[in-house]
Image 1 (tube, rainbow, N blue to C red):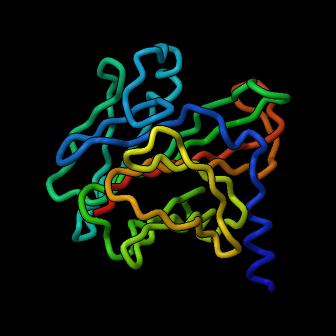
Image 2 (cartoon, rainbow, N blue to C red):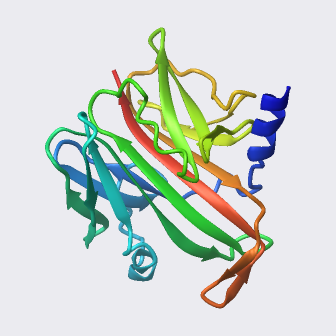
Length: 223
C-alpha cells in the first residue's frame, strides 16, 4: 500500500497532458535528429524563436559497453542534427524549454528526450534515477508496455500518448499502480509522450509561472 500511495503521489498529472508538440529524438546509426513536432517528422512551421529556446540542448550518447559521449546538436533546416559515436544504443537529453502561456495559467516546461537506437538493451535503456522523467520500454511475450519513472520512482496514473506503428491516430492510455501502460503488439517505430506536473510554482527569466510540467518522450523500434 505504501508503495502504491508513493507512486500515486508522484503521478500528479498535468491537466494539459495532451498538448500537441514535443521534442523527439529520431534518426538511425550515426546521425541523430531532434524534431519539434506532433509526430516523428520535422515540422517546417516551427519558427526560429522556438528553436532558440532549445539551442542549449545537450545530449548524451551511450554505447553498448556503457561508454558515454556528450553531444551538441545544431539547427539544420527544420530540425537539429548531430553525429553519434559508432555502436550508440541510447541517446538522451533534457532542457528547460521555458514558460508556456497556453491554457488557464502559465507553466514552466522541461523536456526529457530519449531514443533507443537498434535493439532494446536488457535494462530497457533506463536512465539515471536523477533524471526528472523517463520512459522505458518493457517487452514481454511479443508485446511492449511503457514504464514511466519520475526521479527513479514509478509514476501511477500518468497520461500517456503513444504513436503506434501503422496507425494514424495516437492512442491515449495511462499507467497503472506500478507505473506501466497497457500492452501494444504492433511491430515498428513507436513514439511515446508523457507529461507530468509536480505543481511547483516559481519564476524563470523574470516571468512567474504557477506550475512545472515535465514532458518526456521516447522513440524506439520494436521488432
